Image (cartoon, rainbow, N blue to C red; front, side, top):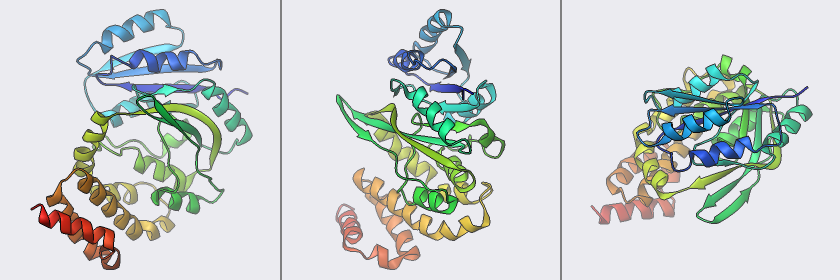
Amino acid sequence: MSAGFSVVIPAYNYGHCIERAVQSVLSQSYSDFEVLVINDGSTDNTDEIMRALENQHSDVLRYIPQVNQGLSAVRNRGIEKARFPWLIFLDADDEMCSEALSALEKCAQESPQARLLIGGHYSCSGDACEKIRPRPITADCKKNFAAFLGKKLTISNGACAMHQQLFATVRYDPNLRHTEDLPVFAHVLANYPVATTPEPIAKIHKHEDSMRHDVSAALAVGMSLEERIFDHNGLPEWAQSARKAYRVRRLLSLLKICYRAERYTDVRCLYRQLFGEAPLTALQPRYLRRLLKSLMKS
């Protein structure tokens, strides 16, 4: 029995590349799929491009314009509108690899209990692309959850498929405008079986504009991400034992982001929090050097 995939592409002012993303899905040899492009209030030529594409491919392509509500709301709407059991959230500036849906179909058939399928991907910067294979997973939800929080297991949207059944117990938080997928993935890994395929599923394009946005967006979310993951997120009781370690890792991650962005006032603030949570970690030479440099720049 065929799995069937709904590929949801959120679009906000990506008129210059949205057709590339759509065509990468339409060119799949696997036949049981649909493409949903949800235009989140774009002010560029996205609407014009998508209406033309929908006219050409109305059998498999649905175009849904809406007022701007943010990425989480777009994904939630995609969940509501999807017709197939499996969902893939492909960013408008990324591409689906050739035969990606066939690879995911095979993975689903080989692991019928899995509700999250994780594939490989290409990480592309300019003309250079690096092939990234998925990290090993186990049948133990505790180990998968811990590996994810510890960044030993990474998941890229566009390179994974999520079963509709998952979304009976979790949705994307519309109040999160950055890292909105982390609480969802944490919930899924703590509660459901997972499978992987080594085949590349997507080409993930990195560009400087998105990296600059990540700094301010990451700080806007800040340490509240801990609460989003651990509070009211449908986690088993055992998951709370990982909370303190995650808090320290989150502080280190924000500290690193701010240091690289030369936001030295934020570096000092985060260092104080880190010292309060994990003084031995804070006193490690590399973190002390970052503190000293931030003091010299004040």
